[in-house]
Length: 332
Image (cartoon, rainbow, N blue to C red; front, side, top):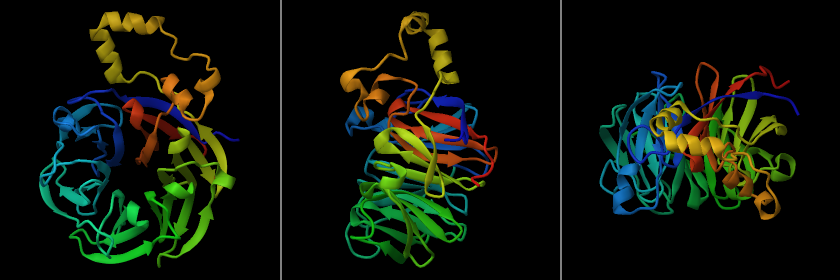
């Protein structure tokens, strides 16, 4: 296998409020280059509801602000699942529990929302992902209806693609020209749909090794980067062929370093700890290495990139972003 991505740095630190993340699930990058990180932060009990928020920071880890809170009223989140930036400069957040898409200004003011629970055209059942096209069309992974639906930003229904027998709990989406790449979560595959919604290609698990993929990002050089959620890794594809497997190599973030500097006893204990233990027996089973080795990915859920060539991988169960750089410029 070849090296396409190289580790750069880590952003993040477990924090219930303020500078830090709490089970980040997705992120987007605004036109100003700022990172908007969506924190899911369960379970849904009163004291934890404020942990559900959007954290805003720079690509090198400077904390800016946060907005949002948990709840069921307009502008609040219960099971926030995805975030994206619209062509008009608003932020949209999907909520799986409320079957709702909420739109905000960049500073967190609610502008409008829409969403009706159900199975009919235009209704939603656990929307897990949102993706905006350059023409303003909103693509929504309507997971438990096993389809992708298309809307305007005002909630006007446009079309429905997939359905039972074609998609099986779709999650992450990416657009490349008129093609829509769908992480077909329960099918362990990537489906490619054309501009009419017809499936034109399938990257199946037998070929890719994917298990419950959550998101896909296609780079400018043509590689596809997949967060292989069920395997706690990231897979780089050239076409449908795996060319690199990443298991994570996070180091302490600037936020973590600041915390440890202010808490020297914890820093001392950390220095004496074995953070890369030898794994044996059950520790080597699927999912277990990530729970035992801090630097590894644990539940990677989403991937985003910026104009500087940074690749941000949302490392949900470790409350951080692992940042990589593309070092191979062509998939040919």
